[in-house]
Amino acid sequence: MRSINIKLRFALLFTSFVAIILAISFAFIYVLYSSYREEDYFNRIFIEGSEVYTIFSEIKGDMETLPAKFIQEVHDKTLVNEKLFIVDTSGKVVFKMPDSLKINVQPIDRSKFTKNNSVYRYTDAEDAQHVIIYFPQYANYVHTSGFDKVGFRKLKTLRVILGGVFIGSLFLTAIISFLFVNEALKPLVRLSLQMKRTTEQNLSDRIDVPSSKDEISQIAKNFNAMLERLRKAFFFQKNFVQHASHELRTPLAVMLSQTESALHNPHTIEEYKKILESLREDQQQMIELTNSLLLISQYEKIDFQDDWPQIRVDELLYEVAEIAQKNMPDMQISIEFESIPEQDSWLTIKGSDSLMRSVFMNLIKNAYKYSTDQIARISIAPSKQQLIMHFDNTGTRLTPLEVEKLMIPFFRGANAHGKKGFGLGLSIIQRIVTMHGGKVDYRTPANKMNRFTITLPTIAN
Image 1 (tube, one colour):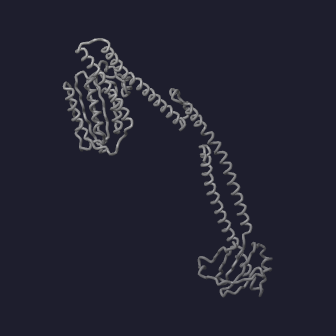
Image 2: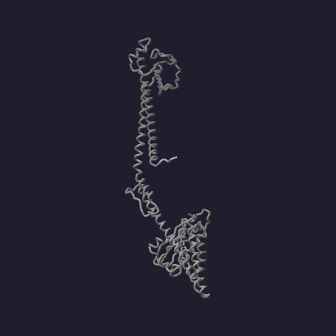
Image 3: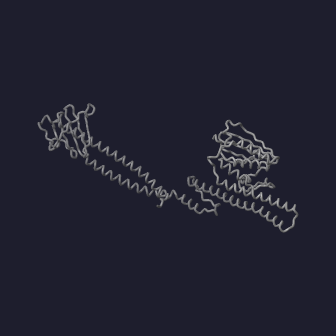
């Protein structure tokens, strides 16, 4: 089944709303007019009965029998299908109009008439309206009825008019709404065509942003921002592959060169040992690089797990610092609290123990490797909402351009010259911290000081 396009959908939706509003309005108008017609005709019947009874009461004493023709001649206003008769309290008919009127007088329920209410009215099954008036001075009941033929004809005409206006209004609304929607969505159509032309080859191109500050303009801005993020992602991916290939190719080339030299040139046992040690070092370097690449690839597929256990971050940090101290004896590590936590939950997060160990170990190694005094200073600032940890060292600060590329795989700053590494540690750290709902920042709070800050949500949050 073919789906309805957005233009037609909006036009139909708007037309439906108008149809509902018109239907309610017209129904209200018709009900009000019908009620007005009924009330007006009841008043006419009441006036008719009152006037006839006034004439009857004035002249009945001068005539023994009062013919209806005489009153009709005196009173020329009559109703359609008018029937009028007067009965006394005993139920005897004392007057009827017309004279040929056959009356089946029903007992009158006198409870319907009180001092404050001397009129009773109703409508029968054939839409004829009846009014019974009680005149206590003569103890007579005047029963008058009629059929509002003109009023019902007007109601029928009103139905035709309202129906025609309803259909015409809907037709006109449908046309206008479709034209309006078509005009309103033109910028969106142009935006769609520009998006369609966007491919991975022209991610640097940008779509036109309308001068108006409406939703279309906001969509265009957001799309351009998305293109910029995609361009950077493709650029980083391309550089990642190039750097990975280069990092793998270099030790392989060195290993091949050393192997060929050992095969084609005679060497002493000591020289062969040196060549093998060099090959082993290159192999270890390749293993480390391969493991780092596998970690990055693996962490891209891992997300936060609800069943991860709770971790006391301070205890884990002390354990990692102790291991790092054994591996790097000349390094000094200081850990201090900026404030005392009110509860243990302020120091507890939900996460993976092994992954967080990797984060802390990498940050401590970086603080040691790129410091000038081999001192790593760690400060913890606990709170109910989040746990903040600063990893500081004294050394060459990074430039703003280096900070912007700091988390890119294989990127190494100017302070990394002459130091072993692949530039993958911070990329791994960022992915793990993000996985735990936190963030990593780099700042330079003082001269010749580098600070990496990790912010993690606590279980108390």
